[in-house]
Length: 166
Ligand SMILES: [Zn+2]
Image (spheres, helix red, strand yellow):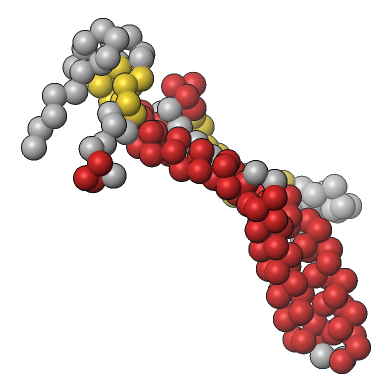
């Protein structure tokens, strides 16, 4: 089955899928460095020197434009994590010290963090318009998956999938 793709603006057939444009314009660089932390008072000692390695993602402007929409839940989870950690830490230490068992404290900590984050997410979904945002996001994601970029004029063409395979 071959569909003839055409730009809705200029009619060019030179189209690229958004996902592909994004992938093409995104590169990951490996970074390796040796850093001396400020607390290292012996400049010639090997102790205290840290090897830092990581990756850096570089995106072209076009890749940024064509990148997938971000899940709004991510921000909520991130925001909820701070109070969740505080509550979890408080409860974990209180209860852990009370029963004098480390693992009980740890379990309480883990469960309360998970519980608070879950509760915040539910609260956000139900009362703070989260459902609408999530639905919008899913719609945008579906559109993004079917978006094609014209290499000729830069216009986006969204190919609506037929109801059967939607
Ligand atoms: Zn075009």
